[in-house]
Each structure stands twice: as structure tokens, then as C-alpha cells.
Image (tube, rainbow, N blue to C red):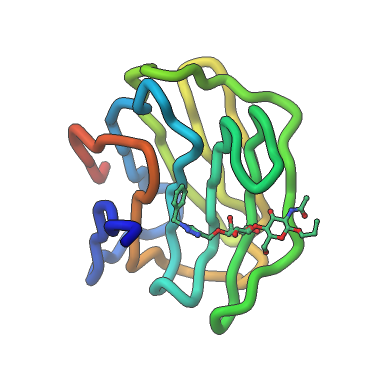
Length: 135
Ligand SMILES: CCCO[C@@H]1O[C@H](CO)[C@@H](O[C@@H]2O[C@H](CO)[C@H](O)[C@H](OCc3cn(Cc4ccccc4)nn3)[C@H]2O)[C@H](O)[C@H]1NC(C)=O
């Protein structure tokens, strides 16, 4: 079965604070995802870089999820990832948007649910988590 990745619950990350996820993209990665929100059914942001999956090649798909239902997808223009990369992804948010900071790129995604705190973090797919840090 598709084994689960890292899941962290009972968080209390407030606007302006950062969630830093450090890890390595597997050398044969098809895709990975970083999810933040209230729980697995209520996501402020599903940040899903796809190397080759669901018919997408080298495309970041972002989305939200409300009561288990996906919202409108947002496909980003840049894809600053390569197989085997060791990266640090920094996620923060305010009442209007979530920000995903990478070494050489920054992505915004609207805070569609008006979430006021992040309680849930999950990392799925072909990404090996080395460290997480909250600052
Ligand atoms: C063209 C008509 C069909 O549209 C397609 O509909 C698919 C099903 O909704 C869309 O794929 C889904 O997009 C969602 C975001 O909008 C999520 O990415 C859905 O995946 C959830 C998920 C996470 N995981 C764990 C995981 C994550 C990363 C790598 C490996 C496992 N397994 N399933 C993923 O299945 C897919 O993005 C969408 N493609 C387009 C072009 O719209």
C-alpha cells in the first residue's frame, strides 16, 4: 500500500511563523506533496511538485481541500526541483495567502479557507524528510 509519510498533528502555527521541512527528493521521484492545514480533510495548502504523475511532467500543482473536497487547482510556471535535490521548504501564511519559500523560488497560494492557524503537517510521496523546524 502507499505508505504514509511524516504526519504532525496538534500544531499551533500562527500567521508569520515558518514551518521548515528539510529533506531529499528521491532520485527516481514521481512526485511528492507537503500538506498544511487543520487536518487531512481540511487543507490550506496541498503543495504537490509532480515530476511525472497524473499526466503532469515537471509541474507544481497547488490546491486546497475543504471537508474532503479538492478546490480549484493552481499550476505554477516554475519547477525549481531536480531528482536527488536536498532542499528546505519554508511555509508561512497570513490571512490572505500561504507562501512557500525555496532557495531559488517563492510561490503564493490564496488562504481560501481563511485559516487562522496551521494544526496539521503531512509530507507524502518521494521525499525523505531529514528535519522539520518551526520558527
Ligand atoms: C483531466 C481531468 C482529471 O483531472 C485530474 O484529476 C485528478 C484527480 O482529482 C487530479 O489529481 C489529484 O490532484 C489533487 C490536487 O488537486 C491531489 O494531488 C490528488 O492526489 C492526492 C494524493 C496524495 N497522495 C499521496 C502522494 C502524494 C505525492 C506523491 C505520491 C503519493 N496520493 N494521492 C490527485 O489525485 C489531477 O491533478 C487532475 N489533472 C488536471 C490536469 O486537472
